[in-house]
Amino acid sequence: MGAKIIIVTDSTADISPEIREELGIVLVPLKVHFGQDVYLDSVTIESDEFFEKLAASHQLPTTSQPSPADFMEIYERLLEENPGAHIISLHLSSALSGTYQSAILARSLMDREDEITILDSKSASNGFGLPVIAAARMASEGAAKEEILAEITRLLDDIRFYFLVDTLEYLQKGGRIGKAAALFGSILNIKPILTVDREGTVAPVDKVRGQRKAMVRIMELLKQDFDGVPVNISMAWAYHQGNAMELYELAKAHFDVRQVSYATLGAVIGTHVGPGTSAIFMTRA
Image (cartoon, rainbow, N blue to C red; front, side, top):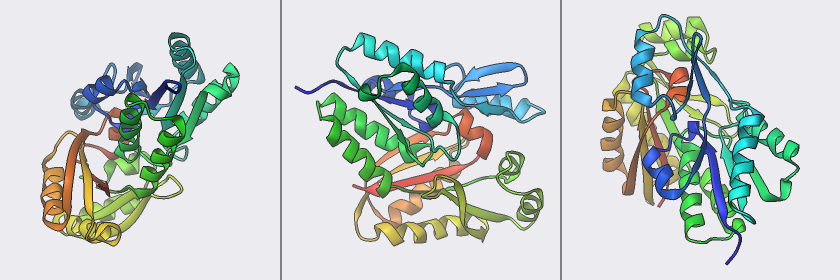
């Protein structure tokens, strides 16, 4: 029997508390700030509560990464409680957040490089949440560190995902798109199809007029990678699930879907994309 493998991730992986508990996934939360009030994403504020608070707030909340001290506390506790264990820590794209850098700094301050592997997913939400879940399943079944790392790498490379925002307001407020583009897009009902690119940044793939046409275009984009092969998908949404379910019905009509899972976008991701956002994540079955 090899060393015990412990999987650590952050709250932007958008993994449900039930799955985290079932598989022993350890969470390091990012923070959401409403004025002076600070909440821990997926710990002291859940998705629906966040969006209700967002609707009632006059100012956009801000987000912040975990500190190196937050990571040190968790890493040290895990290694103390599990002598001889190895930690695999997989996190939100370093191009979108300083979370990965905080983890790296924590490990260097602890001087325990041999016991902790830290990975930059160059992805977001279930784009790295699904590899985290797969890694935790493998760890629970006794897989070796090298096997788990190889599967994480394969899945991160294989997954494609696209998301549609209900309004461009939050991307504009967060500095992801310009004010003129947001205004122009809203007036013309332009729906940008977004993804996180290979560099780990939010990138527009296409712009389509109208929600339904945008969803059809997403199917065309997914077919470039998955036409004719069995797939697993995850559907995710922010507060309202209607658009995500419509996207799912389209996916079922276009692909051989073997497994489907569902996720709600948490407070940190929700701050930047806003309510009504829908996303589809697809990988080979």
